[in-house]
Length: 121
Image 1: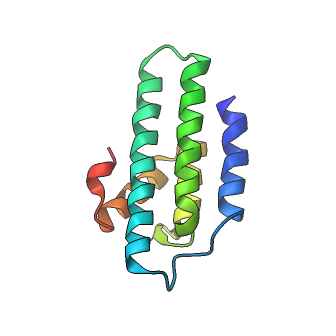
Image 2 (image 1 turned 90 degrees about the vertical axis):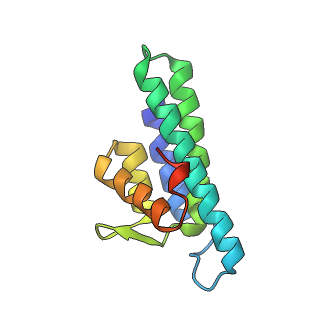
């Protein structure tokens, strides 16, 4: 179920919604970044918890729901660069859809760079 849901969510998150954060109000931008990093940390915790137990459909459903929250939080920030030639959207999708640890490292570093390192693992 999770593998079927995440690609759809990723596509929606990357293509829909708000424009990039360029020219945005600094307080709004800070709140968006904090929300994204909070959602990313919540996804990491849910994923790690689901990975420690015997896989059950409800665990994967929870991780998928949490991933959706992170994708939605990423939308207004999707064009920000995170390293490795990737945008925040590309790295988030790669980390959550494909288990790309390098991409996950980039989004965690992004949260550290914007001052919210304590919200991620």
